[in-house]
Amino acid sequence: MMIRVIAVSLLSVLLSAVRVATSAAPGAPPEPAIKQAARIVKKQELRIEGPVLAGLKQRDPALEGINYVVLRRYAPEGAAAASGGILESAVKHYAAEMERLGWYTLLTDATGRRKGTAYSSPEGDWLLAVNTDPRGMVTCLINGTISLDQMPRLEFIVLKMLSTDPPALPTAEDMETLRKAELLARDGKTSEAQQALETALAKSPGSVLLRRKLAGIYREQKRGTDALAQLKAVVALEPAAYWARMDYARALYDEGDHQAAVFQFSQAAALAPDKGTPRYFAGRCYQATGKLDQALTAYSAAARLAPHWSSVQIRMGEVLEAQGKPGDAAACFRKALKADPNSSAAKEALDRVTRKQDGGK
Image (cartoon, rainbow, N blue to C red; front, side):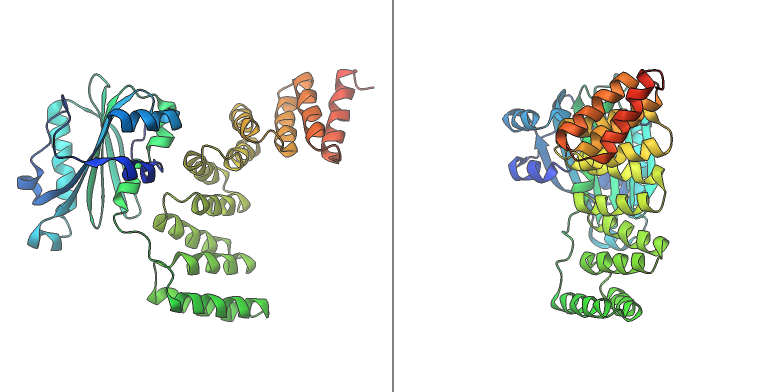
């Protein structure tokens, strides 16, 4: 089972509450002397503990068992900033230190423009994540007892820290391009709208607004692969945005890539603990690939968050029926009818399993 400690969307909450600290965490493993080894310097240290962490635990059970978190941000120093390999050297230095300390490597990951490695102390009471992007490096040191179930929520901490610069806001030119593209698309001139957006994005590649619109144009043109590329780029620009994950996940689902879609729905669910939609669609992905136990778990989570959705109960019933549990399935279909008395799908399903229970009469 893969443990991932890379990045939690709740850091936007953490950063508003934590204090900048310079003291080392008591009992923490020694911080490698990376300034000498890789010519980068520590720019900031954030420590999350005490009343701040206690308050966060009340709001988010994923933090239960954590004693404190220390996040350190580094950047290349002086002329070293121009060296493309400086951050890679720092990561290698950390790897050597972890090996010297006898820590276990939990994850080595390289996706797009971000890289991350996670380590665990031999006793399992320390977790360390090291991440880089072209702007610098962030380490996240966590002390405590952490279960695998907590990992999806924890994995956005460092990811958010790496976003040292917020995504660019739409410029006046971007807004004008969007207006022009929408008018062209409305008149059925989708090719011209596409060209206008592509030209603008060549000058403004960080525009989330234009990429989302271009993805929509591509989907209208039945260019699913191109649309996915744009939505993937949006996720890279807005990694901790629920809507970005959902847009990408839905597109993957519509293209039939259920394995990739379920990962993105799971990421969206981690970003939004109170929303049933990503859990429902994760269940759809699992159901489509025959993973009925996982589908039932996802649907159950969605049902707890959205008990009024008849579609969730119908899907749960279908899974239970496929597992040879007509009685449990009938109970779900009845709940669906209670939520929506006019649901023909729920009525037909209930009739079907009722006949099965009656011996096919």
